[in-house]
Length: 517
Image (cartoon, rainbow, N blue to C red; front, side, top):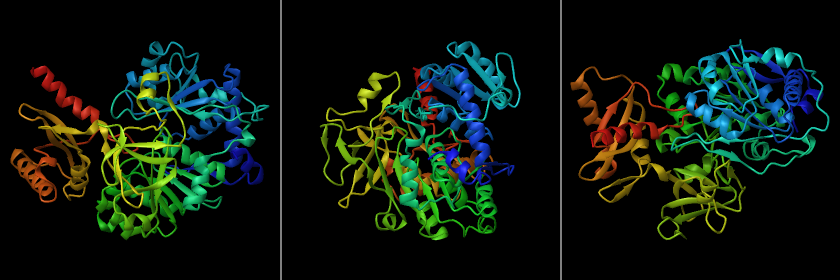
């Protein structure tokens, strides 16, 4: 299924609603615009299997553009609108994109990209133009809305968030399947696990360049439901959108849970959320207390999955399963979970921590990087995306942290997620990251970088809050796992999906150490 099928059956049904402006794109309009985009790509010389990339905010044209690339049988790469010019240039070049599309919102970076992306043959811009870019709107308007002949389905090639290094392009095997015969595993999951149907209204509060929002929103259009797109996340506006559009399904990340829970009750509880039947979350470990409070607030409609952009496996749990196994990310629904002791290369016993591998799942490769692809696999074919966890006796998986975030202090290995989960729920904390920083005696020690609800007024207040947070952590965790020091910041470097760029924080302290040496 694809939007054209629903356009024929129910042309006036809303396919996309922009939450902020209320602008609606019907299925008929979405299909027609996607057909025009597909013809634009074909006229630009892109045959099925060709590459296109774009860097956009959550723009009104995002989904017609994406479906147009899909209709044209292309491999398409949406790029985060929050990346640096160097990072965008790297992805455009690494992906092999011959067409690059952006918007006036990114005009300054778009100008810088021209000399850094020489392989691009066509550049288009929405909402205006600058030198070297043509008008996207004019180019699309010149195309016929009739579908291409003999269409095959395209596929995405997304890049990992780059939270631990250079973004990596993830490409599953590409086959030129007729669009009428193409299937969506995500759509099947939505139907089977969270009861989504063509009557559903799905709220996407995250940026569409990211894997989960992109794939789940496309799944909505496979199913025939309505997708409401937030231009950007705001906790109270999210609740208002649920009420305004009678949202039935949504997908969030744990940071969004925390932001909603920290709203004053008079604002948090004023909205009618009774239309909600399913709240799905993923992308990062969720503090146990935050999830427990969300279930108490919304009821047992919260479910969770664990998966990566690589799509090599997935787990799932509903509220009932989670309450019986607090902290779990579920049981496998795609592939088999294996916990591997990195020191021995053998599968770890039940309950012991190790690197999470999936077997019998989907295969993938890191585009243009055979070494990274090879390092993600064991000789038996199991693959990992670098997370650490354990499995209990009932087969439920628990995440510890990413392997790259491990802190080695005085020869003791520890993961910062425990301290982060604890500090996140402190009433004075809006956001927190715990990282390892250099220490002359122990090699490295934990440090908390905190975005407070209110910035301390002066050094004395900052010192008092630092001591309060350290003591709060030590009341529940071994002191070795708790931060030795706390820095306060106005904002932490998260992308719009809630993923934290820990490498930026860590590099800041380790590069300072290198300069000192």
